[in-house]
Length: 314
Ligand code: HEC
Ligand code: HEC
Ligand code: HEC
Ligand code: HEC
Ligand code: HEC
Ligand code: HEC
Ligand code: HEC
Ligand code: HEC
Ligand code: HEC
Ligand code: HEC
Image 1 (cartoon, protein in one colour):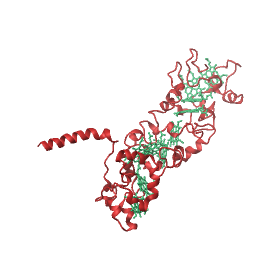
Image 2 (cartoon, rainbow, N blue to C red):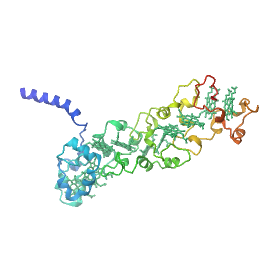
Image 3 (cartoon, rainbow, N blue to C red):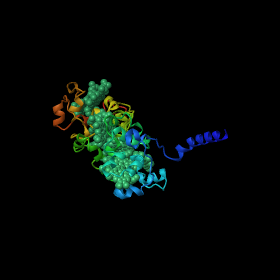
Image 4 (cartoon, rainbow, N blue to C red):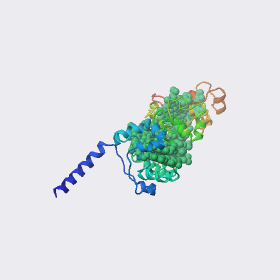
């Protein structure tokens, strides 16, 4: 009886201690990924692997995981390969080199879901917490489309390509073309990356945006445009990307169209009041020909805090 109680006590104690002592580490059913691992047990030692995989063991040693795993699994097991490739006792026992591949979890022949679940053993929190159901997850993209964990290929974050923007351009070629346009966010210049606005691991907002709306995302850096203002310009409050293409454009300030045409999607020039300068009506051609597009006069186009700024002129 006492023994049972003690066991219960220890169990409860451990369930409190474990999560705080070691990082969350979810158990995974390896046999469901590769049935031939059913009877396999962990080897917990890489010395026997060296004969055949010294190259990978060496390169893995230089990655952040190798260091992190020392803390998780202890010094006695350098480069714990089995955290991602499953228990490998059967792999060691297998003598036929041609059959070796069957006795491990190889990322060459498993589904995106299986790949992701292996990484999610430890990465359910942090940036990836909204991964499940995200656009990338649903589209069959996996962690290993963007990260390469066996060798250090980037300065940080274990990217599959040298930097995070190149990672995105693998698939989003149209965005690369847009970033080449005259007016663009300073990505090419290395001042920001796609992740300034997007979280590729999933988000609460639309379009994998970092924040819940487009405007909240932009206001993170462009605080002067946030408002509230005394005089609001309705479309600005609604959505910055009504007028701007965040991925780049050939018009100034990444505008989707050139003023006055941009403005004339919503405003008709025919009813424009006489100009304070020349007493004539302002029409599109004039405004453009003399270089006076609408914003020369309506310069506070994002809204105004001036008592008489109702027309966004000051
Ligand atoms: C006697 C040589 C030998 C030993 C020892 C050995 N392996 Fe292998 N391993 C192989 C061969 C051969 C393959 C199949 C490679 C292929 O077909 O691409 C393989 C495949 C693998 C793969 C899958 C690679 C892929 O292409 O996805 C992993 C991971 C792996 N081994 C890890 C280990 C680990 C960890 C150990 C030590 C516990 C180990 N191996 C011990 C020979 C060996
Ligand atoms: C953090 C998870 C993780 C750990 C730990 C890990 N691997 Fe891998 N390994 C992978 C992934 C993912 C791939 C597939 C690479 C790709 O194509 O993206 C891979 C691929 C391989 C390959 C095939 C080569 C290739 O590029 O496809 C070998 C061999 C291999 N691993 C051996 C090892 C050995 C040996 C260890 C221990 C030193 C180890 N792995 C530890 C995740 C891991
Ligand atoms: C056994 C637990 C575990 C598994 C499995 C695991 N990781 Fe990690 N990973 C970690 C830890 C711990 C860190 C270090 C976190 C830190 O230092 O902030 C880390 C760091 C990273 C980093 C950041 C590296 C950096 O330079 O900042 C990336 C990217 C990453 N892991 C991707 C993956 C991918 C992709 C997989 C699946 C192939 C994977 N991890 C599997 C535990 C794990
Ligand atoms: C579409 C590409 C893409 C996919 C898919 C992806 N990542 Fe990432 N990951 C990135 C980028 C880009 C960063 C750098 C983010 C930053 O700089 O804020 C990153 C950063 C990380 C980091 C470091 C976070 C930190 O706070 O330092 C970890 C850990 C990570 N990813 C794990 C994962 C895991 C696990 C998966 C799969 C569930 C995954 N990633 C899928 C692109 C991706
Ligand atoms: C392996 C290919 C691949 C890579 C690499 C990739 N993506 Fe994607 N991405 C997709 C697919 C597939 C979709 C689904 C929509 C589609 O078909 O375009 C998508 C959709 C998106 C969307 C739209 C989301 C939505 O809900 O509308 C954004 C934003 C995005 N990706 C950003 C990124 C960023 C940022 C990176 C780099 C960190 C990246 N992607 C890297 C394949 C990829
Ligand atoms: C300045 C912020 C910002 C940056 C930087 C940014 N995006 Fe976007 N992205 C957005 C917004 C906002 C949307 C929502 C659609 C819209 O309103 O035009 C979006 C939509 C998308 C979409 C889905 C809709 C579409 O147009 O296909 C993809 C894919 C995408 N972005 C990929 C990328 C990639 C890849 C990068 C890096 C090269 C990147 N984005 C950089 C703000 C940004
Ligand atoms: C992570 C910070 C960040 C976020 C988020 C951000 N921007 Fe920017 N934006 C910048 C920086 C930095 C510049 C360059 C400023 C400079 O060089 O003076 C810039 C420049 C611009 C420019 C001027 C471009 C030019 O050619 O003159 C526009 C327009 C712009 N951003 C719109 C947006 C919109 C719209 C969003 C939301 C979809 C957004 N930004 C989100 C940092 C950001
Ligand atoms: C009604 C159309 C419209 C909307 C909506 C709009 N803008 Fe603009 N934006 C413009 C115009 C026109 C310019 C060019 C102003 C100039 O050259 O004087 C501009 C210029 C900019 C610039 C570069 C010059 C500067 O003032 O810093 C930034 C940054 C910017 N907008 C951010 C934003 C943000 C953030 C939002 C959403 C909160 C937004 N814009 C919504 C029309 C718009
Ligand atoms: C997406 C539609 C849209 C675009 C594009 C747009 N506006 Fe507006 N604008 C509005 C709306 C809606 C109002 C509010 C009208 C109201 O309150 O009667 C407004 C108000 C104004 C006002 C104040 C007039 C008033 O009656 O209070 C001015 C001035 C103005 N816009 C100028 C511009 C200029 C200049 C541009 C181009 C840089 C532009 N707008 C682009 C929709 C737009
Ligand atoms: C030469 C300067 C100038 C230019 C260029 C100009 N505007 Fe105006 N606009 C004004 C003045 C001044 C008023 C205010 C008249 C008033 O308060 O009665 C005004 C008022 C407006 C109003 C409010 C009209 C109303 O009924 O209250 C709108 C909308 C507007 N402008 C849009 C535009 C658009 C769109 C363009 C470009 C096609 C443009 N403006 C170009 C000077 C200009």
